[in-house]
Length: 179
Length: 179
DNA sequence: CCGTGCATGTAAGGTGTTACATGATTGA
DNA sequence: TCAATCATGTAACACCTTACATGCACGG
Image (cartoon, rainbow over all chains, first blue to last red):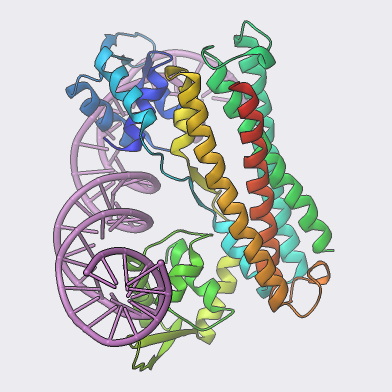
């Protein structure tokens, strides 16, 4: 049972989902391709942590809708209390910034602006998520507390926005350094 | 030639270093173990991107001090201009936060405080790096510009501090949510 | 007509971690 | 005395990405 497996259980603790949907929704937390997820779902099913129903579709391909079982829920709850690995980030851009003196100012500025617009796009998508969470929540977001179903979504969107704001602040600061 | 290989060239563009030192200094940008670095250095040497001298030591084990060659520098400069992969972060804690409603408030608070003290420790280490950079720089840091040797270090420490401050801000905000 | 989305799966290859191997010095 | 640091390397395993495979519907 690796972290990705528990991540899949985490998502399934809120909604029943297909492998395809799980693949899409786990990206912000733990990027993974479908080729990694489908075999893990088969394993989780073997262990009895999840079960699925076949749903036949005529226009689209048939699908398997997975849901969490009782013993899957127990495994998930145990995992939450266990020691948590520190986050790991790998950023190719940081390596390039380290030796940015090897290129001229104009080239460095071009790279920075490209990265900045990447962060701007990310921020836009986070704001959309924020609106979606607001729409799906019954209470105003500030009143949500730990046992509300949208609590996790809410606090994680907040985390993502704070992070991308820090990145954008750094870009702004960097631009003044490259003038 | 993968990203880690270029990362090693990036570090070597500033100083000649042993594999062991490269392993230590690349951690903040691109975490890697020595078992991954030593074989890559051998490959880079085969390709002529780096060269090394044996340095015999009596008290400590002998070492190989690697440095960047002319053609290694050219390869590095070309890579900088190439499209840059987006950063990838995998954070087990975020997955747990997503379904944090499965545990009680006290347990959630315990986990949050643990993560907060992890960030506090990180911030301390970044402040130490900041002081080290300040000590090694000839000019005041605010006056450094792109072609100064400490520029990369300076702007990356700044980036790391902004990031960890955002994380600590989120922890503070979360604590009020769990009261 | 061509690409994208939906939906599942396998195979091969590249990347990253853990463990094995050695051995002197230094500090707790 | 036990662990950590320095210093290199290999082997086995786990994890992740890319490519192969199929096929219908829909929009540009």
